[in-house]
Length: 318
Length: 93
Ligand SMILES: [Fe+2]
Ligand SMILES: [Fe+2]
Image (cartoon, rainbow over all chains, first blue to last red; front, side, top):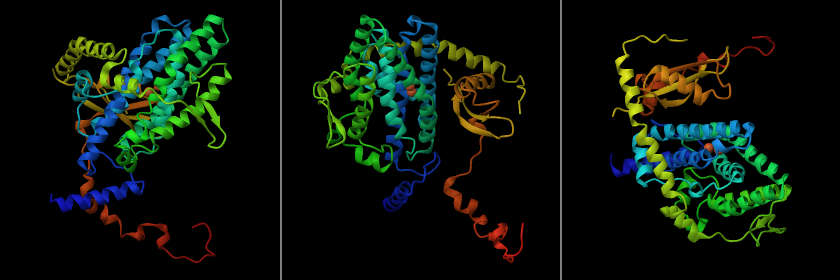
């Protein structure tokens, strides 16, 4: 194809997106669109499955059976979210193995929030409330993204997410109705997770160079700062309702803006964790690699079995 | 190591409705694909019947040929009821 032809294809492509048409896997797309989507969707998928690790840490230690079935169901959902997203990325021509490889070698990133430890039971509540809350905010904005398979994955994911946030808030609410120690545990957890949760929305708009292109492709519908503000506005009253204090002395309702003003984030910490130096980066990737490597014989055995019995007829259910 | 093949999953949400594409997954054989599809796509009673099809078995039309492929239908307005001009007094037709 000549450069001129590609240019006119690109113009038509951008026009389709501007008209709210969806792009499907076999459609022509600019290489940069394909690459950017592979990167974003696979990193989103990695976040879902790495996110299972800090919560999985508490499954055996839930305080009641009710909490345990809920946490198990939530963690299982996150595994499913990973699957929907990996499948969506695969439609762009990358294999599951390549994506795992990128995760395990550190080439691909995942949400930094999962590099913080879950030290107490209250952290499971805080994660559901704040981390899933922030994820929902990001994901709802992506339902109308231009790439069909990604948007469809988002619809399923958003449907499943709302119980995640509610079960988390219920955990914290229960602690806040408990003993002084339980209240202190909930407050301590919020103190540790508040700022990392705000960091989930990414760098400030001014430091987010790819934003403009992503807006054009509807890979982003709102800017990082807009989403962060919406999250603060939504979360502060939820904290106040159960007697929690947001750990930000600069937090104040701004009557003129009709938004909360809040303190600046520790961007140094943000970049430290992004670049692999958070409290649990190594532990998370080691756990992923261990599971993948130690599961290799199971995958091989299943494949060998399938090949052996491939002649056996499978009764079709119609 | 050989990778598990990809399967497409179709789900009938209730009797009376058609199966619809729900998504895809990797599995070593059809039985595992069905079980995994149940675990991933029907955890909240979203289905009463599941089909799994090896993705490699699907033949798809090419969107780049949509012109030739679908154009023949574009100029045949006489296939639609509104093509026929009948008096307003005519009822129930
Ligand atoms: Fe999720
Ligand atoms: Fe979630």
